[in-house]
Image 1 (cartoon, rainbow, N blue to C red):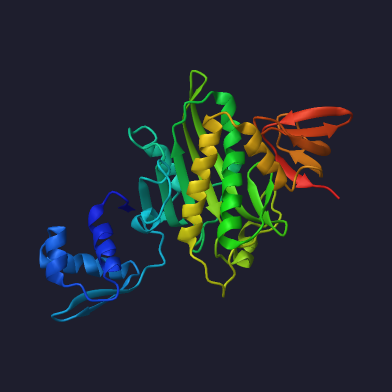
Image 2 (cartoon, rainbow, N blue to C red):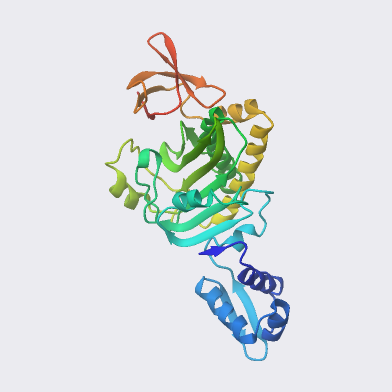
Length: 333
């Protein structure tokens, strides 16, 4: 595990980046960092293992040729425009589930806004404890928030998060994803990202929320489809970035965290109309004939006419308007 508050590697990378056109001597690194020359060498080797291309020359020192492709904490922090979200970052090369680790952090102080990210997950999960296949090439993270909200507002966070991610994808990748209620982002009617929210409630107040986000950034859709095509509510999988295309996942992640914090601030200020309107603009669900399964009311068929102020789906069915907060949705012809 690497963190954004383990300063040594971060400082070395920053020093190398600031002298990228020249060699930086081991003596200067040693003096700047307060480390022995041997410790500097060991940390340089660690950075090379993490994917940084660093050349060394006797009597000249070290020079950074290219940065890593990994989503390391100090790379995410470098240029991150948030005040709270993402200011503490826990990074794993492999983990069972970022959601599980974030839930363990929730009981600790000073973790509001912390994120947990991994290059891959061995036991990632989606809603209703469905397996979420999380290979390398995706962005798998969890965000821990401790809002001072009533329980009724917990249902807004899938909408809030999916909207923030859609806006980030639009800005960074120039794509136009659609939002499928309650928690999916789609491209060409296939899933490209999903949201999971775990909440702890005390005395009708939200104690904490852990928002799990799975993004098919640059994956092989056909490989994953073969594995999960028989799972519940499968309707296809796609990727944001194709095999031969180049894009930086860190730029998308930084933009997403920024947009999430901006929308979160609007929610705190009570500006729900703006959030709701922006979500509805991008919705693929509103105005569609749907079938809802796994809802508390059983199977429902009808026309989606909108969402209400707490993110619930409004369905016109058999002459009545029904309101749903949970359920699996499929579109009808």
